[in-house]
Length: 418
Image 1 (cartoon, rainbow, N blue to C red):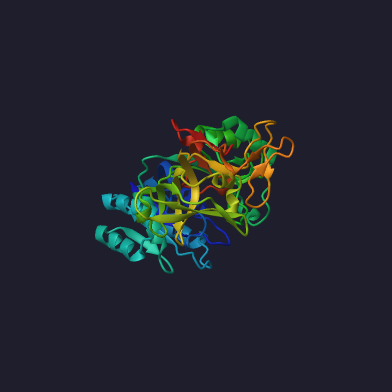
Image 2 (cartoon, helix red, strand yellow; image 1 turned 90 degrees about the horizontal axis):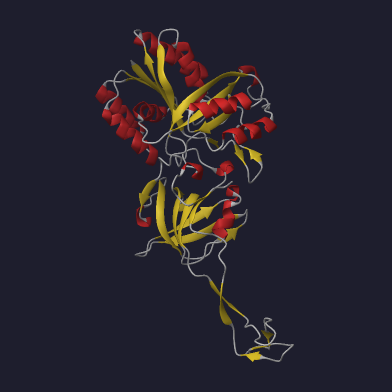
């Protein structure tokens, strides 16, 4: 029994590590049996040099011909990696036994930006077979995927296009996609974005993926696949994955948040959100105790989520989830823990007619034109809050692979995006 891990074989222009792994598994079935489902392992989403979703793949092969398996795996990497990509640095790891240190390495790869030298030291220390190319960074993901153990997991079915159609527009009947979603939600999710009326389960790049269906188990994925009408696909593979689990999120104090990490931070809204050009919103979050603070951002692609952010008032206690880039936490979701009492100063109400008074002039107070009633100044009035306590999330079109959708958060007060 051997475990094979592979990473960093795609580029911004095309190809796909999961497709390479699916092809590799099919070829290896000639000399062995793939045991269980392959693992689709998402790693730190804040890594700057990732291609798209920072995913690696690992699977277990039962074979009595391990040396031949290594040769087949290596040939597949050489054939289906896009070496022309500047950030394509393939790594391939094969382990007959999986040391506990690899699981620790996987957990660190979720939260840190690791160095390839550390991966090479682990490989040498345990005598693991590997091959790597260019700057060899793919060894990090391949090694982490081999050691990955999931405390929570979901599933994704990936359908792959026939090679002759790579780079051409995808042919998918959108009506059938909406029908599949209606039949299987909430057992599947992020197939469509209801609020923004978009199909979101198919990429737009030239890579081999036709579409991907995410869900709680293989059965609803297969049910959705049977409903969807599309161009013919080469193969479809179901992966067990850490997607949709918040595995990348660390609970921390605001003062502990570091660059390129993903956190759950609790604090108090210091100021209302301010917009900048492009529709992006920013607001400062300060610690409940001490002077620590961090800027939080809801960028334009988060669409309707920004309405929730605009509704925050100073004094609201919230917990934010997201990755820190350039000193700012990019919001993935948040929990409104406690709402401040919103008050505003308004012109007084006339006791005679019930209408709001108007200014009588600078420094002259207020008066009612109809009744002649006068008042000295403004009065405090409660502001009705447009949001409630509970969890809010970005829409599927803006969701990161690892971020847990609210449909999976049982026993919590949630306000899903649909």
